[in-house]
Length: 158
Length: 290
Image 1 (tube, rainbow over the protein chains, first blue to last red):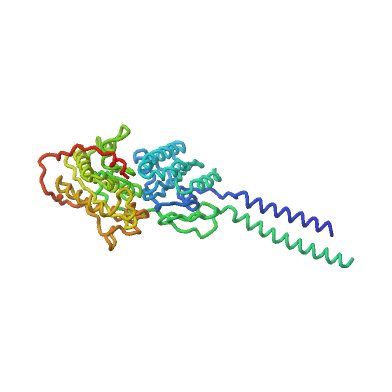
Image 2 (image 1 turned 90 degrees about the horizontal axis):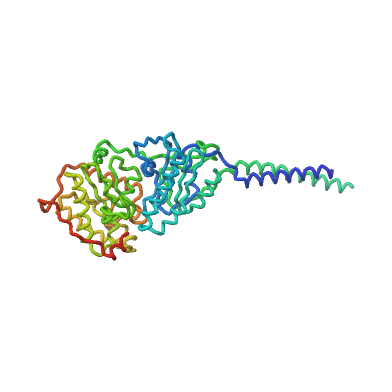
């Protein structure tokens, strides 16, 4: 009897530990497979001060010209320009590698900082803490009201 | 002894029950742990739908994002071909939202009229027009200059820029956008001179300038006025910068203006290019630019 009770208690403790472990590990889901998927993942987990809208003009906004020949999957959620908030996602292709796209993202953040430094200096901290991450084939850029949250989210997928 | 056996039996039954409960709970936690907690946005993105099922894969988890279904007509596309749009952050939004694809944009957040021909770096914005030929040039300025204590300086710089664009593009049709009203709330704040009173004052000068130099004056259409004659509160979160829907209306208005073959009204027929006054910004104006 006592032995049975002990065995059952041990089993119970094991199951308890297993469930806690699973809850705290974050249980990574499959990574989004599209630019839109990544954009939505970030969007649902951060907040914005501005009114945001989706645009299918991501490449042009980031300085990629038609003649550059970029055909990668991309997505853009952008503000009204009252703030520099945005989420941009680009997938590398044969023309632009993730390194190239990361450079483009950094250049855009620099230009935005220059523009907003005079126009709305209180918005510059968002650009200084902007999140730019290369995960797999994708480069994800996030400028929002809580960049730290975006950083934590994306780092969990890196 | 019997009592002991009974107690043992109850204890084992309780343990079995607990084991079963914990097993079920562990299975549930395992399934839900990989869903990030949804966050709320201050203003939800337009044209997206809420997820309704637990995500397992990308296609299962994430809603289809509906991109802009606005497709400009061939007439609208034609109206913007061979067109350059020079302006401020409001104009920049038209490009960012992808509402006008066929025009070239020389726009920047915070761009003021006096910065078009000069720059702290080597390439002033006007340099983007070098080597290109446009049939139409659209100017969207004024919002950032409403705080200038001398509006006549704004007009002087405006004329200078238009003169330069005409030098680079002989025969170009010039269109000047009337400054948009701001919301009542924004006007009340009176920051950097952004008030509807100043908007009206500057617009009167722009309209007069257009008459003098043979430029089209593009009036703001009714959609941008509420019954009190100010920008509707829902047009712009900050009372100045339009959201997607109002930018779309504006893009349509611009297309309609560019579609006309009507010559602009002139009060004089200039025989020579207008001589822009040589003015420099006072320190006060530099400090008050938005």
